[in-house]
Length: 284
Image 1 (cartoon, rainbow, N blue to C red):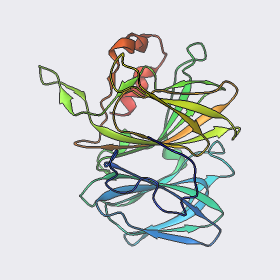
Image 2 (image 1 turned 180 degrees about the vertical axis):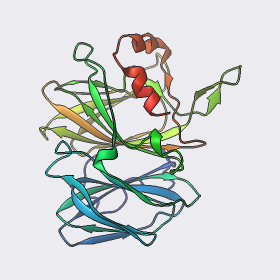
Image 3 (image 1 turned 60 degrees about the vertical axis):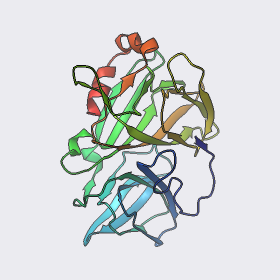
């Protein structure tokens, strides 16, 4: 599903128990300096990530000051985030003009809040210009936080250079299942993306193929587009001459670690893209 850019007036773009992706939550909060935004999402753990600007986050009696150091766009520096426990109230106070993402995943247990600063971001880069798959992933809530987070994974993905593909070889993660020997071969993780382009009039394509070798859907994504991935294989691409970014939220149904199932028709491409298995390992 594609949700076109719009003024959401600080109301959730993907609310709790969404019919397509009930395991995820997503809001974009825009504030002027000094303004505040209070929220709580019962049954969902969340992560506050300034896309631009600087905020202070208060939750569970703790204050995380001066979060976010980026200027006018998501290419202008490293991300930072604050983990907010399931159902906990939080206040976001803008120190500068800010656009702030709030990512969430369904989880019932209340853990403890913490901040992830720029120096703690887990970065992986893979692919190549020759294969048109060169990209960088900045894990905000990645595998290193399995002992502190319930089901939520939060990352930022960038195409490296102008033009190219991301999320290829095509993969899916819509079913918890094991093979005949009991080995885990796929997990259900609902997913939500928010896209940005540089320059801002750039655009791209999000594919969603429900079954191997069957025709699927394609969405024209522009700056500010939100895409919901409920099931199927889902590569995306950006027009030549433009850079693409997408904020990524994954919510696991039964576990936090992601197990991707690569599309059989294209699985042999795993051996042609440099560093892709390192990328896969970072989600485990």
